[in-house]
Amino acid sequence: MVCAAVTIAACGGGSDDAGSADTSAAPTDNGPKANMQPLEAACLATPAAGQQIAATVNVGPITEVVTLTAKNIGATAFDGGSLDTIEVKINGSLMSTRSKDFRVHLSPVFPSGVTEYGHPGPAGTTYTKYRRFSYSDVTSGASGAPNLVGMLPNETRTVTMREFQESALSTNPQPAFSTTPNRTVQLTIQYLGREDVSAMGKAYPNACKVKVRYERANSLFPTLESTVWLAPGAGPVKLTGAPLLGVETISAETSGVAASN
View 1: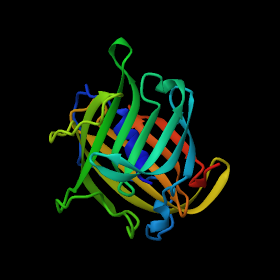
View 2: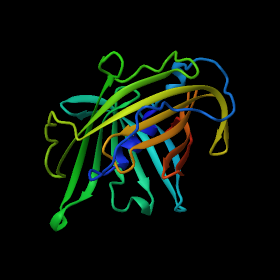
View 3: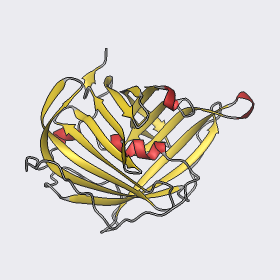
View 4: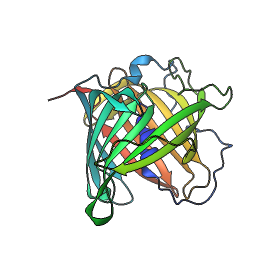
């Protein structure tokens, strides 16, 4: 599930950034040569309703482990429609100033939207933040998230992702989104091939290895880059990267798709 990397980038940025991005370079891989099989649909597995993924996230250079669970709760209402939804709950003091509970609305692999709960407001009020995403192919201009199935090693898909944001008191219904994006990002997804990987003490052979490059103009940290390992039938099992000033700031391992207890 490539949205593991996309959502971290989308939910982690503020709105007061400054700077510019160099969007000329595509992601590159300097690691061992991966198996040359194409990317298959099984690598893009997401939890079925009632299933979940557990994860630990190491955030550095600060030493802290953040744990989260992501469970498919079925279709929920979002932006006037009904979308398959992953409910995420986070534990970790690094998230103390941000929402720890949110929902990712899928369509079906990339997020169409995110609902974040529990943002503190004035006089003890609480806000809910809503984010909606749209995608368009950089080359053809076609709308919609890229189809990754069948990609060959070192093949790329590049899309422009536009993010629209709205907020409302937690007691109020979701407002309508404006037509002006709050954030515009270029996403380059590069399939690197197949590679055996281990996560949370379990081996996953022949995982699909994907690099996601996130480039945002007029941002304090304009370029983020992560590598995600997607195991057949289990989805995202490992993530590394999101370089910040040359430091590997995030690494994550997950249980893969598992039945809910």
